[in-house]
Length: 221
Ligand code: A2P
Image (cartoon, rainbow, N blue to C red):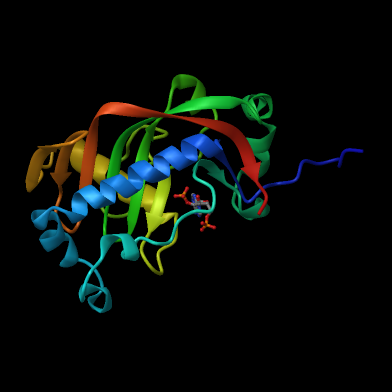
């Protein structure tokens, strides 16, 4: 027997398969190891973290808070408490694509004193699953970016930071790049080009994008 109305999940998104999640988690760990070996990174980054974490700072320990399943959120519903959940669920594309498999394209890895994330660049078809009420700006600069710009996978958060911050951090990078801000430091590294935009904001533009496999679904936990 079916319920008359669909259950509204905590959020919708693309959930990485076990193999892809393991691979991406390792890529994230490698990214942190690579950074932790760079004196210019540590010196700059440590300036922007809470004083209690500064002593004997260890990057891996600082970013211990990881999502239980790696995913790229599309619509955050909070079980229906957020606006426009019903409209989203009833969209034909959403209904049709639920439980379908997708490749997600990752073009950048980034880190800030708050979060570590992977930028996801969506295809046209994937953009159809992105909420249309989304405002792709952040409070800081307020510049509007194309729909879907915020799409990302949270890899880890600093203590007391919620995962929702990762998307805000990504928007900051994209806004800096959209207004052609000059990075304060950049260097070629293994895997791509590493740039620093001050305030502990570092981004690795991958020379070869990473592809992960995922399933479009709702999370009810
Ligand atoms: P993200 O997509 O950046 O990882 P939580 O971990 O706080 O329970 O949140 C569950 C998921 O929903 C996370 O993936 C999180 O962020 C996302 N999320 C939480 N709050 C929001 C929000 N207000 N807007 C968009 N996504 C959110």
